[in-house]
Amino acid sequence: MWTAVIALTVVAPMLAPRADGSDSPKERYEALVTACKLAEDQWRERYPPGDEPILISQMKLREAKYREWPVWVFLPGLLALAEKYPDDPAATDALLWIVEKAMLVPIGDRGLYPSLKRALELMESRALYDDPRLFTVRRLSLSFQYPSPASEHFLRVASEKAKDRGQRGQFALALAVLLMNRSYLARNPYFDQPKKNAHAAFMAGRLVPEYMDYIRKTGLGAATAEAETMLNRTIEEFGDVVVKGRGRETTLAELARGMLRQIRDLAIGRVGPEIEGEDLDGKRLKLSDFRGKVVVLSFWGSWCGPAIRMVPHERELVARLADRPFVLLGVDGDADRDRAKRVVERERMSWRSWFDGEPGGPIAERWQVAACPTFYVLDAQGVIRDKLPGDAKALDKSVDDLLEEMKQAKAP
Image (cartoon, rainbow, N blue to C red; front, side, top):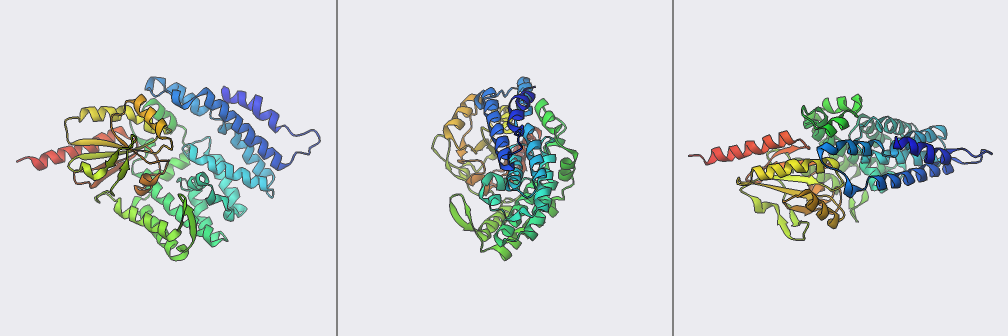
């Protein structure tokens, strides 16, 4: 209902053409984006993050918030503008706007995916591979790494056809990351879990069949092997290309070698990389100090609804295993430490968390975490035994199996 009100009271007046027909594509683009920002500001006031309900009994309100995200209303208008004015720079702006929004919701959502797919088709047909904004805007570049049939196809074409060598190299690297992320999602598709709470079922019900089939049909070994091939290609063909990353200049070879190490170091059966840093209170926290215990690493952020919805189960897990050789440790991807601490207090999170400084921060990057919640389960020797999405049942089984394994090993 609220989205309809936005469309009638905000969108329509700003998009109405001038009587003399003198409004330009740029003006219409700016009107759309301005109207969307205004609508999002109103939406945030209606659903302030700190007051977002987390109880299962209040999921209807959470679903209302999701359905009323103003971007749903504006996607068709931006896409129509891009279709109507193919040679105008405003069309490119509109297409990039759509792609950037792809990282804010599940990429296969029926409200987003058709517009994203068409936007990528138009970008391909217009050979927009060399626009420097594709990799200078962080949120935009991250969007290309979210796996979907449309985004994978675009990256394959762009990594071969982009005129600029540096762009081709960055597309090749992005394709490798996408394939790694696709393999991870396919290991335990969240939308195929037999037991889902009401909100998880609601979110899964919004996914388009094309996206779900794409994830289900992923060949795990093949996707990882091709990711390694793309990383090696990046090193061999584009290794000397200089890019900016996290406030410093680096090369594509350095980035690709780091990802190759991550693929090999983070494989099941390998000792997990060391984590040493500060927790949310600024105190030293080191992963290897917990050798001798089964460790669950929980990658989360206060901004991530699915991660927050896992907290009640994490509390139950910690309480249930209080007298066992087990510890849960978080990795928080907030940029605001104080906000994260308020959420920890509100959600009664008794376990410690490293402060990673931002979504996809250094720890998440080292551990190849593209989405939260993500759980790594380590045995008493620090060996990675499992990597899981937000699946409570699978997490419990993984931890319980390892604890039983430790018990049997100590039995006379």
